[in-house]
Every structure is written in structure tokens, then in C-alpha cells.
Image (cartoon, rainbow, N blue to C red; front, side):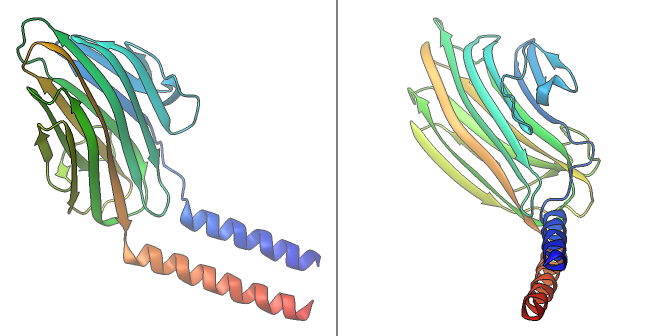
Length: 237
């Protein structure tokens, strides 16, 4: 029985190691920029915070709430995951008030380095609302970095989604590969209004990676071998 218990623990450790490899020197960071005002928030402010602080105590999640230049209310959250399918997500609600109109774009970016699962392809998705739709626009772009540094725009992953100008919108994209390891992922949202009044954009933008076939095959093979060993031990017990 002790041998069976020890083998079970070994299988759990083995599968966990394959499915969820650690992120090397990973730093999740959120930035918001409008005009001359820039806010930069790293996870738990481990790499520093400018113009605000991380309001979410969970690891690999960053939340900012505050004003950025002309944009009065911003509630932005980004989260990352380095499991079999690498993920980076950006969710933001942003409100802008102007009496005279005119362009004043807000750029929101989320970036994470230290991803260790190679990618053969990526999928991107965005969905959200623009209120009111008249005069508003929202554009979304995903990037992968070969240098494993934050905010590396060397490889665009998938098409540019937008600009969207309707009250409700959604878009999907595929394409792009990264062969380096480790690497970084970056999401960018650019919001703007050109008409007077109070405006709000709310959206969720995510990139989800497809792992290299060799990584998936290795994981499946290890799980099958471990499962076979467990069955043999159970018969002997």
C-alpha cells in the first residue's frame, strides 16, 4: 500500500510538471497611457508601480482602478496562465468625458514574459460594447516577443481586430507562431472618442496559444506510462 501511495504521488508530480511548467522570471504588467500620463502596474508591484498599485492580491493577476489623463474612470484587469495552452487576458471598462469632442486615445497594454510552452498557432478573441456607439472606436492587437522581455512587439500574432465602431462588437483571429523558449506575450487595446459627452468602452480581449505537438505528445505519453504503472501495482496489491 505504501508503494502504491508513493507511485500515485510520483504520477501527480510528473503530470503537474508537464502540464504546468514554471514561468521563468515571469512578470505580469499592465499599462495605461493617455497623452503625457502613463500608469504602469506590475503583479504585486514586484517590479514597481507608477501612478497606482495592484489592487488584486492573486498571483498572476493585476487590477488597476483610477483616472488616466482625460479618461476619468478605468477598471482594468489582466491575468496570465502558462499551462498547456498559454493564456493572456485583458478586461477593461473605461469612461471618457469631454465637452468639446476631439481625439484623446487611451492605450491599454498587458504583457507577460517567461512563457515556456512553444506555440504552433494562436487564437485571439475580443468582445465588448461602446456606449454610445457614435464617435467611438476600439482596436485590439496581440504580439509575441522573441526576446522574452515585456512589451516586445517583434511578432504580431493574428490580425488586428477592429477598429470597431458599433455599440456592440466581437472579433476573432488566428495565426502566428513562436519557436523561441521562453517568450513573452503582449495585448494592446486602443480606445478613442471624437464626439462630446460621456462615453464608456467595456471589453475583454484574450490570446490563447496552441502548444507544439511534441509537447502534447510527450505529456500524453507520460500520462499513459504512469497510468499503466498504476494499473500493474493495483493488480499486485
